[in-house]
Image (cartoon, rainbow, N blue to C red; front, side):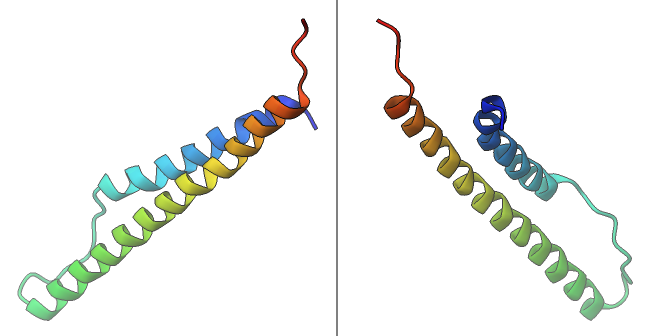
Length: 84
């Protein structure tokens, strides 16, 4: 496997995290009956749950991106010899 692929893996995971986080800010058109308070409440709760789920995915992707980063740093510091 090419080393540039291994080095770029945390960046790819962080871009996925960014996509989930930006998805929270993007408005989504939903069908709603404006004369029905129950329907409006259900749509509102559905929107909140979707946004919360995307924020959780973004959070976990951000944290999981640090694992390969730390591994890359350890591999660089331990196994890669700097010429003297």
